Amino acid sequence: MIHTTTASPYLDTEQTAQYLHLSPKSLNNMRALGTGPRYSKAGGRVLYHIEDIDLYVVRVDMKPRGRLTWPRSGSAT
Image (cartoon, rainbow, N blue to C red; front, side):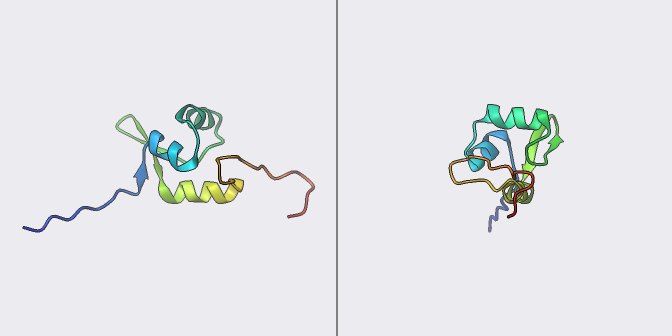
């Protein structure tokens, strides 16, 4: 019998925080403020799709150690 596993493209809050080099509390705060990555809820669990996390990283220009750099208004990029 051959067993195959398929990795889920969804991460929970702990996994997403680790991926973004943030604490889970920071990620929860960002979610509450509407400033974090897009998420969904399934059975009361908060889940983040890996593609949404990666889009979020690109959007906010996340730096390696989890520091966020927000675009300054009026500055050329």
